[in-house]
Image (cartoon, rainbow, N blue to C red):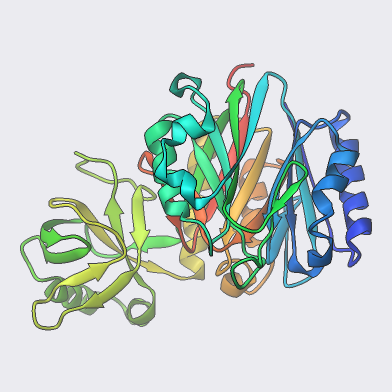
Length: 386
């Protein structure tokens, strides 16, 4: 297995495509089996012809990609400027099954629609349009149909209205739905989902609640818990508390301690001053462990560094990687480009890395796959056996 990634900032789409295609072919030394393309909206006039041109340049490859307001390639991030990236792979012993889905496909058995047996344990690369497709429902359905395989990807970000995005699959361009590639055979997919938060206070249990409303935490009103928590913080964290407070929900059952990174981070939606109840952006369960969290640039950097170090300590040796990062990260969060990609290379070495800045990121937490916000979700690819 071998991967390569390249990016071009040439303003002319044909020149940018020729440049990156030549680079990945030269780095691979063989015709690729998979090509992942991310293209900024500056090249929108060329969207229709792009997949066909890629098919001519790399006829053996399964092509998948989408429009992206920020493009990642060769380990670099380009935001708000023309950019086109290709990440390509030679995948001996791997079978790739491309698939386009529309919203109606979610009403039927997804395993039947995909056409792969559960025993194949396929991994999925998923790119979806945020305006026309329920990606959250898709990843839940994929988990039910194929609980073992990993799912990673993101929501296209190049358009601002229905029909404004482009999804690439094979020689075709779609303006709605989702495009996927199922990967089976000699391939393993590792994932790192950096949610960019750090805990404050201690983990507690939901002792009463319903739907997405927490009515009691450790038998106290959530408003009372938050008031005590605020008063325990220093001045800097009190400032963050006012505008960057989130809640983490444990997703592994029967855990006495929940490792950092295994909480599903969700927004706080509102408070009822009368009852003291707290509405959150997820369905809750009685006795589920909750942890309040803060997010800022420093915390996001520390969280990602910790997860990368943990992964490196596991001894895996990926051949290539894709990064699906939130539009709210990058320059908007750190004030400079290449933060997350630079940290990735610093901790894991010069692994070929492509990707894009998404309207939502897809990756697993606690054994289940979710649609996230504010995260950097990495898919790391290696042979299942040497």
